[in-house]
Length: 228
Image (spheres, rainbow, N blue to C red):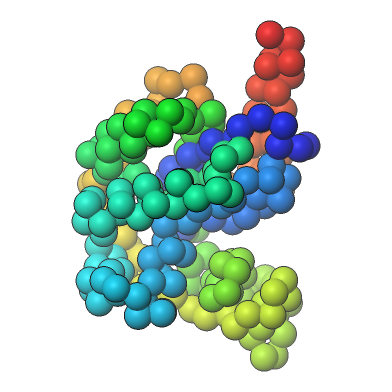
């Protein structure tokens, strides 16, 4: 599969369901960048960038980042050169207001979404996965500390970066984040569900199953595009 046309993909679903994992798998196949707002925010905190204290305050409490902060971050990122053939957006929008703001932003930039993947997994599986995960602070790759072979030095075998645990990967905070999702973010599923680009992807099983379904959907759209 090669990126011969645009691949503008939006991943939605509860935190910890696997949006970042699946986006990373698709990134090399499609040749478009995975844009994780969570990763961008955590790097902002790690580097003590401007506004880092405000971002840290919300992240440590499992709270949503204010809309005006997030939309500006997204706007700057989508304006970069590497997004000209598409992008995979993960972590935004998280509220109906943000979803409408994203629509307005994309319209103003002359862009449209090609695929909207709603990623879902039972909440108990989400919490268990999160308690066993770490990520590379350099490239963002996610590791399962229970199921994967990890170097004794806790280094990423992709780029050599340091593997770290997220500060908000605690059971109490995780359940709070899921409660926030139910209250503020789940309604965006209904907002997008009537669009032809919308697809449900179950990710409670092996990664290969969910990934295979996404690839099937994209390849079917490619064939339809070729025949048009």
